[in-house]
Length: 107
Image (cartoon, rainbow, N blue to C red; front, side):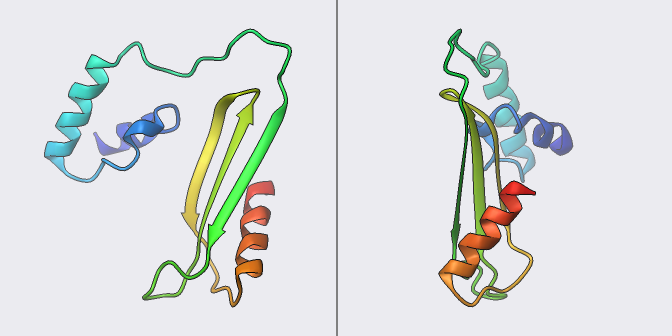
């Protein structure tokens, strides 16, 4: 059940932070049933400009001193991709953290 919810988070970012406990899973399923008509909407437009954004913070994980990166892509005004993760290396400066985030975004 959790794996199915993880799959759904690619198109329903409103449920990303609530996937760990069974009671919460049941609540999410009830929420998804009530909001079955929700989804991604791409308006008809000539403005299909692809934009990407990334951001990072320095050593948010206090125990291992790893930084966190986040990225998103917009097609026109619609969100088509997003991601956040812990960086694999320990950065020594904010600049290094931001460059790592950009590198992960472009890869």
